Image (cartoon, rainbow, N blue to C red; front, side):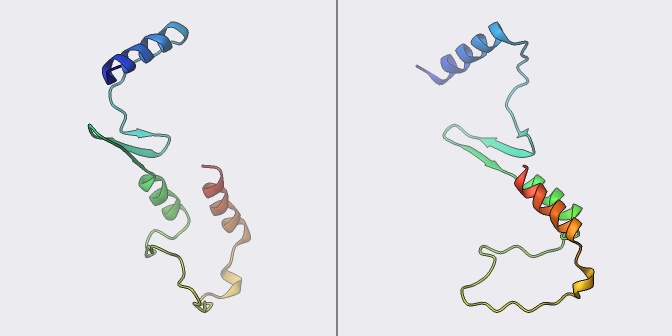
Length: 98
């Protein structure tokens, strides 16, 4: 069955049971960016990642392919008194609940 026929049938089936409105091609859904071409669908959460980083003063952090190299020794650059357990929990919650 051709792509348009499947899409049309799906819309018709949904319209029978739900009040739906065709708003065209989706570009963002639930903080997820969606890009389509004739052969693929690409999704990413770049805007959500930027929102979370800015909410937890990390907007200027540098990205990395892998967080740490094997055998890397981490040196504490921050004073322990600056650590906020509630801020840490909120940041982890954003990652878990999304």
